[in-house]
Amino acid sequence: MNDSAGTPQSETTVLQSALRGLACRCPRCGQGKLYAGFLTLAPACDRCGLDYSFIDTGDGPAIFIIMLAGGIVVACALIVEVKYQPPYWLHAVLWLPLILATTLLPLRSMKSLLIALQFHHKAAPGRLVDRAK
Image 1 (tube, rainbow, N blue to C red):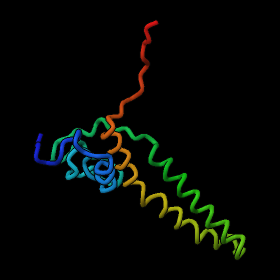
Image 2 (image 1 turned 90 degrees about the horizontal axis):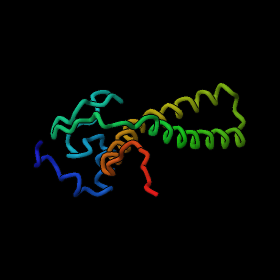
Image 3 (image 1 turned 120 degrees about the vertical axis):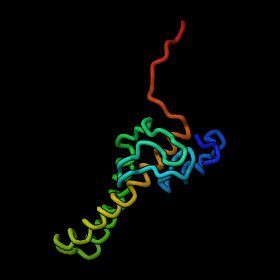
Image 4 (image 1 turned 180 degrees about the vertical axis):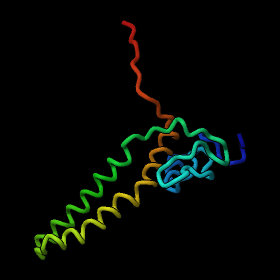
């Protein structure tokens, strides 16, 4: 491990972790690349050597994006429909590119943001705790 690669995880703030996530960088050092492809994670950080096998974002980023993009596109479509009443083919021409732009463009950074916050807060799977009575 390279200690000079960045500040240790215990000294980073939530804002620093969030900015590292939005930049698609390693959640520990903030310098290494997080992705090997568009949404394919690298096996480990090329700077500090952090193993990315702990990462499990599941469908969380996609759900956030779908909810935000759905609200934006539906609101815009309703406003245009009520105000201008365009034909259906024009709705398809207008809203299909907007749907693609509002879902695919932020997906990579949203996924890395959730990864960085997961790392910062030391998230782990839930487990049952035996309570002594």
